[in-house]
Image (tube, rainbow, N blue to C red; front, top):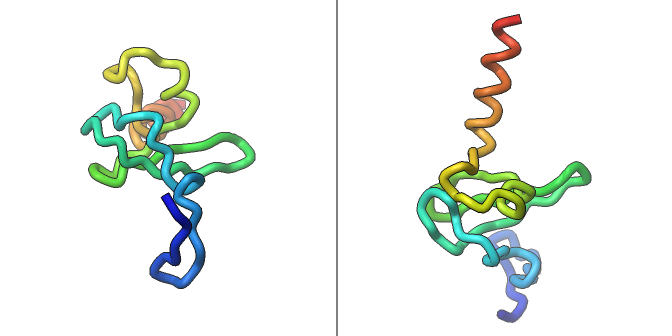
Length: 83
C-alpha cells in the first residue's frame, strides 16, 4: 500500500501503520494498529476498539485466553486495593 497523507497532513507508511498479521481475539477483525514503546507494544483493533499486548498475541495460542489491556489493569487494581 503506498504512502499517503493522513487527516493532519502527515505522511503515513501503511506498512508500518497497520499490523495485520494478527486478528483481534474478540471480533476477529484483521484491522489492527500497532503502538510501540520502549517497554513493548500494543495492538488496537479498529473495529471494536480493544487493545492487546503484542507479546500476548505472539505467545498465547488460544485467543479466548488473551486479556485486553483494560482487563489486565482491572485485575491488578483489585490486588492493589486489597492490600
